[in-house]
Structure formats: C-alpha cells, structure tokens
Length: 255
Image (cartoon, rainbow, N blue to C red; front, side):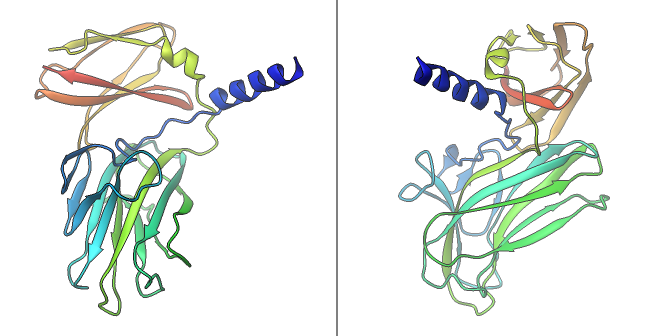
C-alpha cells in the first residue's frame, strides 16, 4: 500500500510541475526534407541526422568546412515582458576536435530590445551534453533564438543539437488533466475557433515560422471563448493558451 501511495504522489508531482515548451519542433523530429527543418529557419550546411539523437529518432546536424560559411538555425520564441525563461538544450560533437576553437553559440536577441544573450558551449568528450541558462525579456514579442557554430582555426567539424526547450522559469503549470479537458473546435476551421473547459486571460497565434499572427485578450471569468482566425492563409498554426503563469499549446489547421 505504501509503495502504491508513493507512486501516486510521484505521478501527481510530475503533472503539477510539467512545463510548456515554447519551442515547436524542439526535438527536431519534423522535417520537410533532409535539409529543411519544419518551423525553424536554417542556413548553410544544416541537415537531418537519424543515426545519433538524444531522444526521439532525429537530431539536427550543423557542419562547418569553411570558417567563412557559418551554419545556423533560428526559431522565433514568443515571450512576455518581465518574465524570466529557462533555456535548455543538448549537444554532441561528432569529431574529436571539441576544443575552445570550435564553439557552439546560443544567441537570443530582438531588434529594439535591451535584453540580449550570446553564450558559447564546448565539450570535453563526444557524449551528449546538456546546457541550461536563463533569459529575461523586456518586451511582449517574439525573440530570435539561434544556434550557430564557428571554427576559429578553420578545421572542419560537426555538431548535433537536440531537445531545445524554453519555458517560464519556476512555472508550475496547470496539471495535465486540466489541459486534457480543453477543447478547440472546429479544427480544421475556416474562421472562428471556440475554446472550452478552461478559463483563459489571453490567446496568441503563431505560424510554423514562429511569427506572431494574432493575439486575443479573453475573459478569464468565462470557460468558453471564441477567437477568429479569419484572413490567415491556409496551413498549420499554434495557439498558445495563457492564464497567469501557465500556458499550453494547441495545433489548429486553417483550411
């Protein structure tokens, strides 16, 4: 009996502290083709790797053969002013030259914002390594989060990146069982979407490039709200459901 109660407590704690990742396709599982990553912008020698990954079945590989050609991936992360976010990712050097001459650069920036970070990651072996940092935004906007690699000595090397996460630091989140009750309909839709079974303060809509396309202020005393996606091009969109310090993401298709 004690063991069963302990298991129940552990499961409840896991649900309570579940956080919502603001990065879509942060596990790099979805690709349009072997060189085109869904939801991200990529430049110069960015490919899919199906042989080595931290979780799932894929990771993203950044390769450098010429120090003047910099590989880079970028995602636009929706953030709120005054909030501190935890940024976490995993990386793996595929070559033995994982020295300080071959850094992985994480950058978060937005034109017009005073807040900015640029930090380098290195390794001491060829194993998967996890890196974590924090970032405080000063605007209600989407910040550019990017990864790139550099070769100071012009040697070639490859780096794998996987499991990129961004979430509000210390957020508890609403229990998974609450979000499971949320309904969005109709989906697919041509215009209006009704959100039921949860009280919300705000809903924001992003396209697959991470660009904010619509924002709605909602009545937090009402568990039924309707938003309009009319005027948007056909395609997949991500609706962020926000209530105080918590958030959840739902996929909606506009037809």
